Length: 300
Image (cartoon, rainbow, N blue to C red; front, side, top):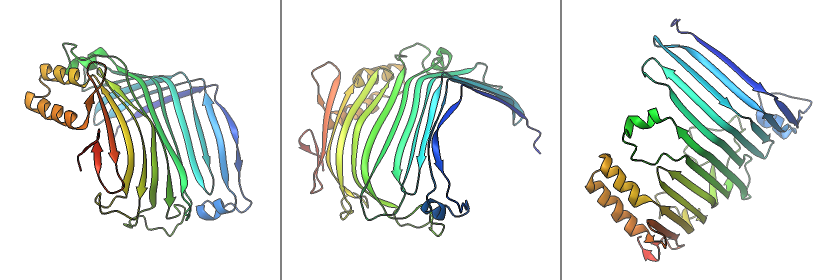
């Protein structure tokens, strides 16, 4: 009705699948809880050697186009009455977008992008494991994009990476497949009992944050932290290059001296200098009696 139009052309090379799907005899997709209880399950992996997508069209009277390519990837999934698992990754992704509103293409690339998670889905009185992971490795963008906010090239333009790997345990308090479930209920769907951060990495514009942590949660005490279960455990963090980045942002006029002073005061409160130049280390500890310690100094 709007008169807008679009064209999509996509391709996957050497697409393959290996897996197993169990379908019970009385298959009724309208009742997910029933067919999962009857034994429905899926466990499989799709792989491909390369992929590409070309999209073009008009939106609100303006022409646009997008092209993306990748050098292969995988999509693995597993689901049954108890758990749901996804593991997705893609290699050497490149994307270019052009619009009538911009006189240049938006070009991005990433060496690797991935997402994985594993969650229990069945209501149970038992504490069950879960996991979550994310990685965006070696993200880059064109110099034209950098030039919009950093025309002088003051910021390091090294590839950026964000990675997180976390595992834990939780108790599921409601069955998500129950058709009678009240999605608008204020009742919590589950209880978080433990969380372990196996890896944390954020590296971009010359600064790098790394860390790990291990926490337990007391669900009988939700008063200390405004309705959240009370945590106990330790997080270890290291920040490299923060002061140099702040100096660069001041020189670019993005932040003021007053803003920088507040940021540096906060870093001084939460961290201590490391052995290497422009390195800050921080050990944040949550105690069972509700205290929070930063490098041994009580801040709550």
